[in-house]
Structure formats: C-alpha cells, structure tokens
Amino acid sequence: MLQATDVWFGYHQPRIFTDLHGSQPRIFTDQHGSQPRIFTDQHGSQPRIFTDLHGSYRAVLRGITLAVPANGFVGILGPNGAGKTTLLRVLAGTRQPQRGTVTFDGTPLTRLSRAALARRMAVVPQETHLAFDYTVAEVTMMGRYPHLGAFEIEGPEDIAIVEETLASTGTLDLKDRPFSTLSGGEKQRVIIAAALAQLHAGHASQPPSPHPGVLLLDEPTASLDLGYQLEVAALLKQLHDAGRVAIVISTHDLGLAGTLCESLTLIRDGAIVASGPTDEVLTPENVRKVYGVEADVMRHPSGQRVVVPVRQSGTREVP
Image: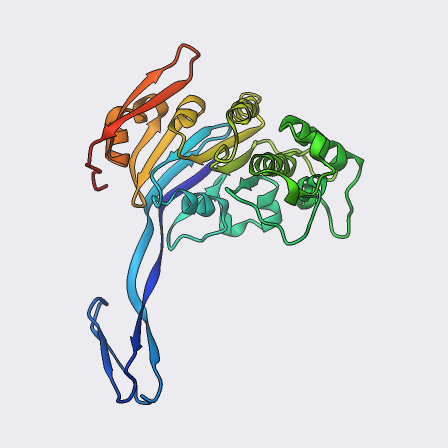
C-alpha cells in the first residue's frame, strides 16, 4: 500500500527590490518578512537588485493524508493550483515533503533505491519532452530499464512486453514513428504504454512481486479525443479489474474520476476538503466547496457518473 501521512510541502517566495535611481545609496525595507529586513545599496552608480531569501513561505500541500491500497483506484480532484501535481510528485518520491512521510508497503520511499521504486511505481506526466528524436518503440523500451542489470541490453522478452503494451494502448502501428511527429493524444498513449512496460514484471532476472505496482497519472485524458478517452478509461479499468496495478489519477474530469475511481480525494489550496468512497465524496455540496460551482451529479443509464455544472455559486469554502 502507498501511504502519505500528514504531508506538508512548500517553498519560500523571495522578494526582489530594485534601485532604479542608483546615483545615491538607497535603503529598501521588506515589511512582509517575519522581521523587517533592510537592504542598502552602497555602490549607487548603477541600478542594483536585492533579493530577500527569507521572504514569505507558500504551503503547496498542507497536512495531506492519503492511502492507496493494493489494487486500489484513487482519484485526486481539485481546481488549478490546488496542489494535485505536487501531490503526485510527492507520492512518486521525486519531491521530498518538509513534514510527514510517504511509505510503500510500510517502507519510507527515502529508504528505497530509485531502481527498486521504479519497478513498482510509474508516472505518466501531463506532457513529455525528449532531448533526442527517439522512435515510439525506443520511448516505450525506456520503461524496461529498471528491470535490466548493469551492462545488460534488452532481450526478446523486453521487446515482446513493449509490443504488448503498445498494442494495449492502440499505438502498436506507430512503433517505428519518431515520437516528435505524433499528436498530443498519441504521445500520451505511448507514455502510458511505457509506464505499463515499466511495471511489467515479466523479465526473467526479476522475481515477481507479491503486490501490484502503482500507476500515477497526471491528467491522463487531457489531450485525447472522445474515442481515445473511452479507450484509455477502458484500459485503466481493465488493468485495475485484472489486479495488475493500483492506480492514482489526478484529473479535472469529474465524470471520469467519478466513474472509474473507488475513492476520491478533493483538495483545494493544498488541503483536503473531502476524502473517502466516491459516492460519499462526489456530491453537489463538495463540488460547490471546491470549485465554487453549483452542479448536478447523476448516474447515466450507461453506468457512468455525470457532473453537470449549472452556474457559479461564488463561494469556495476555505479548507
């Protein structure tokens, strides 16, 4: 199980002061720090810039506690700037919380090697930019690197896994295309294929794990047309139902999360507003609290959950 407990993360915002007059020494005072800080330009012949490295602190995550059970399907929802992407990065171990802990099966992420963690956890970002013009097959094969030993090259089994994951995301016919020539939606599906290849435990040199891996996705359907949105949603559901992987998605698509996820966490301004089973969390009242929007939440005859925004309420409650 992936567990975040009382996680806080933030950064300082330096304050910059510029003397545009410069002919005489000038004094600048930061009245917003914990104590007033005074900066003096003693050289004055040219404009000078001063930075207060002790400026205000901005908390991006505030006391977040979140559990992702083995084979769980968890959705993280919230408006722009709520901290969803930062939370995913903390869960992935690429950002260290200033307070609190993140553990995987009871072991702190800081005690796991990057290779060991990469065999158990994969991240699909919103956008992917590569330094070189790799083919689709090469990008997907990068997911197999944590499973290879020192100086080991990819083998037939790795190639088969790459083709399997490309086929599962509908991109096998693109395998020889340069990644840079793909559309945004095609690129996203290829990166999902690479993540699935990374979590695939089929390599002979690695014993299978008794617990499924974790797939973290940041806005997985944001760049996809309606058809591929349904394909990706069906793929994620298939992976979850087969018990192959636990899934965490951060998304603005309330309908997608409400249909796929077993549990939801709603955050705003870095703090949890509501968390728990999807039926209990995705309610008109919670949508109003988080987004400041009056909305109807209903079930479509197809079984999918639909959220219809009606009007702005003008009230977002402070968490």
